[in-house]
Every structure is written in C-alpha cells, then in structure tokens.
Image (cartoon, rainbow, N blue to C red):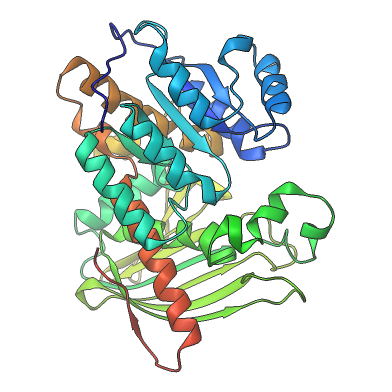
Length: 398
C-alpha cells in the first residue's frame, strides 16, 4: 500500500538518497556531481554497496552521517520513513546494476518517495509494465537517466524537427560505437565489465541493453516518432562472452520513416562516439556526443550551417535548449551538464508536486517511465528478431 508520507516544508534544496554508486562505480560519481551541480540537491543518505562495511566507508568519504549509510536499500526505506519529515529524503537515485532497478524503485515508490533511476529501467518487459503501473498509482515523479536528451543541441535538433524545418522526415541514422569491451575485461576483476556481461545482472541483452537503448531513445526523442519494426543482427564477437557485444539494426519508424541503428562495444579505437543524423525532404541535421556543443544543419544544395550552443539564435529557436545551457557560447558544456539537466527538470517537477504548484512546462522535459518501457520493448523485439528468420519484428506500442 502506498504511503501518504510527506517530507516537511519544501525549501529550494531537495534531500537525495542513493542506492548503489559505491567504491569503484564510475556512474555513481557522475550522478552525484550532476544532481548537485546547481546547488539545489543535497546527498544525505545512501545504501552504496551490498557490503555494509563498504557502504559505510563510502558514506564516510562523502561526508554522510554514519546513521544514514545503510546496509541495504530495504533498510534505507524503513529507516528513512521513520525519520522526522524535515530530515528524510525527498527522492532516491538508483545507480545499481540493472537487476536491482525494479525491486528498489518499487520499494521507494510504494513508500512515497520520488525516484531517479539509471537505464535500462528493468530486466524484463513484465517488470517495466509493473513499474509503470506503480508510478501511476503512487503519483510520484519517476525519471530515467537517458542523459543524452539533456544536451542543449539535442533539444535544439528535436525542436527543429518538431517545427518542420527539415520537411517531411525520411531517414534516421543513429550510431553508438565503443571499444572498451573488445577483450574479456570481465575476467580481469573489473566490476563494470563483469556485471554488464552477466545475464543475471544485466538482463537478456548486453551491448544493446547498455548503450543500444540510448541510441533508440535518442532516435525517438529527436524525431518524436516511435520505432515500430526492427530487423536485428546481434553478435557476440569475444569468445566465451554470454551476451551480445555488437548489434546492427534496420528500423522502421512511424510515418514511413526508415532508419539504421548500430551499437557496439568491440569497435576498437572508439571511445563514446554516439551520433545521430536525421534527414528530411528539405534538409538534414547531424550531432555528435563527443562534439556536443555544435549541431550541423545541412540544407539542400547550400552550405552546411554550424549552430553553436549558448547563442541567442539558439535560444530564439529552442527555449528548451536555452534552459539547458548554463554558460555563454564558447565555454564548453558536456556530459555532467547534460546529466544535470535531467536531474534539474525532474527535481523542479518534484518541487511542484511537493508544493502543489504547477511546474514550468519546460521542466517536464525529462525521460520518464514511458521511455523506460519503450526501451524494454525495444530490447525484447531485438532479441526476438535476432533469433528469428523473419525479416521484420514488431515493437509493441506499450
């Protein structure tokens, strides 16, 4: 049964708890920096590791009270609920391996807390559908950290498409090559590689679940269209690895748009080369995550235009891009700021809920439980397609 607990008078600063993100967890540090970047979130509690000692040690490193460094997320839920309203957390950030997302998110939602969760949202479509129902029933904010939607120039690209600048859309090409898993790092004691290649903790997909869902989400976010059919070729190149480490997918989107989606973690020499190209009848656009402050706009039979983040002409075209920018043009913003934009919009929405006010419409621009379900439906369709001899596999709408 959902708790009706409140969290006391709401100030500008929201109190955050964290599940996961202990010693050696790269993404935990990213979440903590991003959440607190604008000075309106404070980390006050956490269950940082499955080892109580490691969790306490991480809490101490982060300056937390020993009493707020918990041995498990279940203990954290119970003890946070028992605290006075003026002390307990407002929301939790879940940054664990994938298999913990669903039970932890469900527990905190049922206890009345808002949730920010890493992707993919769950291990299975069934869990994703269940979590969506829990979010609806509890009426809590649920944000999913598809952080690439937080980049200002991605928001500009989306708004250009939405405003019809490209004309009728025809094709989308989205690529996400990495090279870090080109060898069996999972056998070297590297935790980040070990859980990502373990079906029990990662789920049915490896590379496509880890980064392919980012590509899927980016394509749907920028175009505003759902992927409706896939033809997938998934491969495991590294001998002995149990999950895919490379995938090539033909996609069909709504309104007859065609596309290609490629993700790989064995593309030797690549770092984090996410990119998207969208083509319409009048012009195209191109964005690269490793060069995030520039959007290339390509008119038909005319010079390529370079739109740079932070300029007035960007703000005039896309208020969402302007909201997502913190520094003037020429002062680069990148990964942490994009992550922080997801947190800022989600926490602004939480404040509105807590104070029973109407949020800024631009604050509602963050990935939510629907996007998480879309990702799981995409993964399930990919796995089905890769095992099938049929050319096309339908991606359910919900």
